[in-house]
Length: 343
Image 1: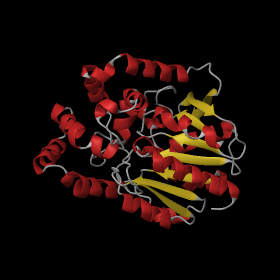
Image 2: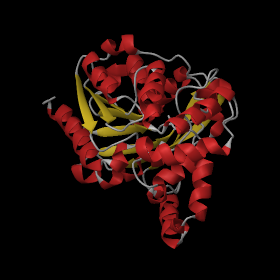
Image 3: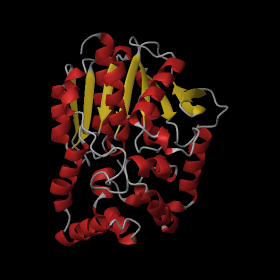
């Protein structure tokens, strides 16, 4: 659940950094070319909403009739580039996957009406995407990370009869528990004076104070979001942050990095008691250094009827980037185990 202000902070940081030279620019140009609308695999899918029809972006990579993974990005309001490195791991394993920008995000339409930013409507959108892509219980794996993990759980509560497997990455089942973990476990790992200053800024709602991002960039993001020096963060991640739609993010999540800002629409979300309703094969992925509590996520894997837990010991919130050695083998094994009937 990343704060959209980091996008602007990172842009400034990278602009002043030696990493903003030609190599980085070339990488970003390659990513832009990668999602050209006329390219093979790209499909703009019409979505019906209470406000009319809009189009959302998808791009299929690979072709496997039995293993198709739809990727739900985080935010809300971010980008499929969160999963930019999946093409380095899934194709050689014969796993088809679909990059997808949710409505309001990146290359999809971005209507300016907050009535669209509800869990129920996003679930309905995912179901329409599923139908348009021809995914069903014989081939459909749904993978969501952070907000995408929340959305994947909500989809499963309503449509798990359409799923072959569910993968919940780096997301707890209660936002109150997430806030408790952030403030009682992660925050106190910082120097006392740093955490006290951050909490004072949050108390005052002074989120535009440059000290907020300055402190987070030094003491929080490289420890719990992506465990790399900021100037080494992959171009896909930086582009994801640059593309975030703050209108969606702030309305649903708010500004805080230690919970949900009071008044945001996701405030109070808690599905702990519903997890037992999920009977489809489920993998829950967490990182030892995650912004989310790995113990809670392991508990989630035991609450669902047919669960498995994958811990990325070197990983944080974006474990696919800072612990790919554990993330990808574990996710791939789950998909193949379900596909072969060995799960």
